[in-house]
Length: 215
Picture (tube, rainbow, N blue to C red):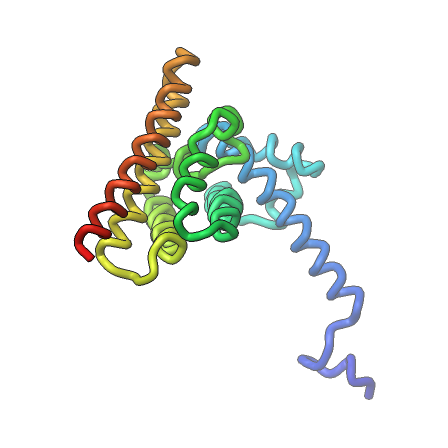
């Protein structure tokens, strides 16, 4: 008896390759969906559009997902490629330069004008809060991850102050971006971005000065 014919021993190479190809196709769908959901929102996400962007037929969708909600959750998680790039670039900076770098690379006209490549929180917070089902829990899971990543990036220890700083930075960035996208006046939109970044930088300098005086 050949070993390959014994259940649980080894998959034929062709089966392994097909599984890899299926996973690659699924990832392609999720990647395109993560862009479209940030650009158009949950309500504007159409399965047909996602499949077309992935170069696939609409009928192929159900070979990879049970329903649209499963795709939405996968796309939302995938959208945090922006977070990884944003925080990853700051990690390369000296500690004292990390917060200014976060503010100055997030609160930009380019980020505002390309939501499909940007922060999922700024693009989808309101819809996820109102969507019901498992969506709010999914949102809070990613929020918790982001807060922890910022704590590790900006602070030497996981304290209440460090958590408050991380939450403040994220709230300032997301809030500033949401407001800048909500207004029609380009000048006002740019002012909102600049003001948020400047306020965050000023608050950071004041905090450092206070800590030095205490020590």
